[in-house]
Length: 317
Picture 1 (cartoon, rainbow, N blue to C red):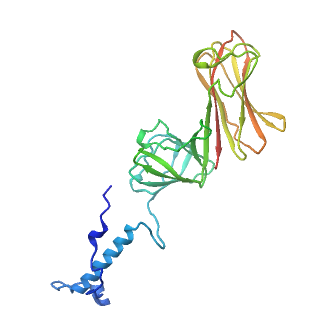
Picture 2 (picture 1 turned 135 degrees about the vertical axis):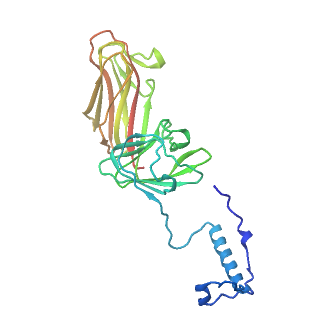
């Protein structure tokens, strides 16, 4: 980026003597070949140039002005790393049309102070901008400051007509969020030793402090409290069975002491795996949820590890 010039270098005729504006006819035709410019006219031009330079140097624009340079990429779907749509180099606005739900892990074209606005033009298709996502190169990632209870990682979800404006921070070499009309997505990952409620005899002795289901009636539960108007989008768990037992995750909604099962998923096998449910529940005041994990069909020896539970919520705040 070019260095800003010193405005005083173009200061000229500021005492406003010997500076008479040319006639309208002279302004239209300019100087003719071999004509000697009148010094007063030249002083007027120099003074006006200086006035404009000083106005722009002040950094405050008055009256009507706009920013041009929009591109309209289409067919966007799936996960896109280092997003670099055609025309990005000169764009101030990205009007995105999706062919399916899409996730953008980073944006190319970053340079000091650059500002870009992204808008989702698609109906019933969501555009997610992920925070500090290693899918993109380090200097192309979004960096959304994200401390919310100490454990939340904040992503941004744009539905139809919603926008996000990002600014490139050259010091950190990341895109930072200036403003948005989308939904903030908070991702909470609970280690087994935090916030879990157990029944039966699960044990936390073993690899990485993971809880182990060691009996047919063991249950690990995680109470989930959402904010008023917040959407509970996903609940999942990581497990590593040591047998062919079926492990079940149930998500219960609790309102005024009444519990309702709203989603469930199960897993089996002996490999490390992740399973989730997507309830897309919008919470109201007084609602809580509980994720219960237990043996659905115990068929062999126990000692199956539950590594973590992940909760994803969305909120426009």
